Structures are given as C-alpha cells and as structure tokens.
Image (cartoon, rainbow, N blue to C red; front, side, top):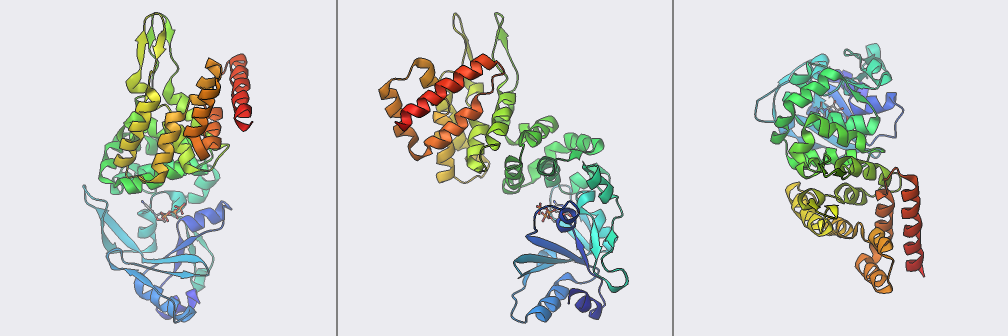
Length: 388
Ligand code: CTP
C-alpha cells in the first residue's frame, strides 16, 4: 500500500533512521518508523492513512513539516526530504525542500543516515551514501558531514553521540570526539528536558560508566552536573589520601546496574557520595573525613533535581532518602549493631530497605579482598538481624 500510494502521488518513499539501523543490528522490535519522501510528507501521510483505514487519525506538525499516525502498534512518522540550515543560537532549523541525499546528509550519524527504498524500481535496496553499514560493522559513530558542522547544527547530538556509544557499545570516532570537546559549551542552547532524556538513556544502559566517562572527558559533565565532577581527584595530606570519589561513583553505578533496572535506584547510586566534595576535611589525628555528607548530599539532590528539571515528586524523595541513608547499614556493622540503631534503620528505610541493601552492596568497591569479605560478612549480618 505504502509504495503504491507514493507512486500514485508521483513521490518517492524511503524508510530512514533508527529503524534501519536497528534492523541491521538485529536489535529489539521497533516502536516507531520514520519515512522520508521527496515531496510533501504531510500529504503523503494523509493519503497512505486514508488507504489503510479511512478512520485513522493523522497528527500534523505543520511547523516541522511532519505528520504521523499509529498503525499496528507502531508510530509511523512522515517527513518531506529537506535541506536544513541552522542559526547560531537555536536548534530550530530553517527548512528547504531537498533530495533523499540532502536529507541523509543532515542527519546525526552515518548509522542513522541509512535508507531503505520502497520504490518500485529499487524496492528493498539499502541506500548508504556515507558507509553507515561499515560503521555498524566496526561499531563506530561518525557524522555524515564535518563533525563540527553536525554538532553545531544541533548540539543535542553531542549527548546523542554519548548515548549511542553507551547503549550500543560503539566508539565515537576521534574527530567527532574532538569536535564535542571543542563545542561542548554549545550544549547550553539545548533544553534540559531534552538533555535529560539522553542522560537517562545513558543511565539505563548496561554499563552507564561508559557514557559518564565520555561526558567527563568531553567537558559535558562539568557543564551539566558539576557536582559530580567536583568529586574527582585525590588529595594527600601528611601522606594520607582518600579514594577518588568520582571514579568510585562510576563503579557503584555499574555495580548497581547489574542488579536493577530501576532508573531512580541507579540515580541514587550516582548521587550517593555527592555531599563528599563540600564536606571533605582533613582532621589532625583522624585523617580525611566527610562528616555529615549524607545529610548535605540529600539536600543537594533536591537542588539538582530542580535545576535539571527532573521530577520533583516521589522519585526525588526516594533518591533523597537513599542518599541520606546510603552508608547507614555499613556504618552500623562497623560500630557493632545495637538493637536501637537497627530499629531506627528499619523505621527510616521503610519499604525501601531492600533497595538500600542493593545500594550498599554496590557501594563495596574496595579491591582489598579481606576488607571486602569483612564488609560483606558484616553486611549480611545486619540483613539477617533485620529479617529476624
Ligand atoms: N536525528 C538527527 N538529529 C537529532 C535527532 C534525530 O539527525 N538530533 C535523526 C536521525 O537520523 C535519527 C532520526 O532522526 O535516526 C530519528 O530520531 P529519533 O527517533 O530521536 O532516534 P532514533 O535514531 O530512532 O533512535 P532511538 O529510537 O533509539 O531513540
């Protein structure tokens, strides 16, 4: 039907973008398919929808020149092929009509610029002008145009590059990585909501540290969550050092990600030591301390969620609570548990006790195996006492 309607309208039709990429990578079943036509995308969407089912509701986004409808559980989106140019200070493109190749060129990465023809003369052909197939094979993220052009056209793509690197386990090609380093400041013109969509996809990937490291390396972390960058580094006074809490945090996030897909529990791991940078002190006779960091940390969570435009309801309260209690079970066993301390923990943690344990287990990152064993043993002890 799709090809026939397009042919009848004298328009070409192609599938492009993520659907083609995921098909070639044999990844999960798709939720949306993007179509490009050389001609009017909105009119073609309406014509195809009408042919499929006259009752189908087509949503039209006139400003973007796109239209979409749902069919067999999939979001089908149509756009007329375009050339785009962007103003310096905005993500909104000015749009001109273009060919398929113009449209492929303006896309973010070569792996997202592949097209499948739905036209009679070459039905099913893969159209790959920028060697996207080779890049999929070599697991490389490369931009179709000069990287600085692609990223300055739409700076959100810097976050998308890191998100794809993290979720697909790809490498960002060197010129591209350098362009992100040079252009990182331009992320400021992108809304935080859009940035956080990408950030949360990184957080939900199998090994979030891959993306978090890239954010740090490119300077994006410093611009978006400077509280995390502040945890970086080790100081030494009188021969005593403390651990680098940034790298420790990344390890904890990876650890917890093997045990939970709960985004906010992963966020709690990301922020569990956030109060350590501002509370760090060297005390004579004692060494490095981070006194009260859990309390400050939980206050910082609120500011951070507010600034990052993350949800401020129960999700935030849950993260705050876990950060505040984060090291309590471990501290308890170190002091020798008293019943009253245990009761207090039970009361404070409430129904989130299980998650608090998951966080504590992930937090044990010491390489010293006897120390590790001691932690685990004591920790199990508390868990057992609580269960009693
Ligand atoms: N695209 C782009 N620049 C952006 C966003 C999207 O060039 N900032 C293009 C890419 O070709 C992309 C397509 O639009 O493949 C669709 O974008 P989107 O649905 O956001 O992402 P997908 O690639 O489909 O990936 P996913 O579904 O995993 O988000």
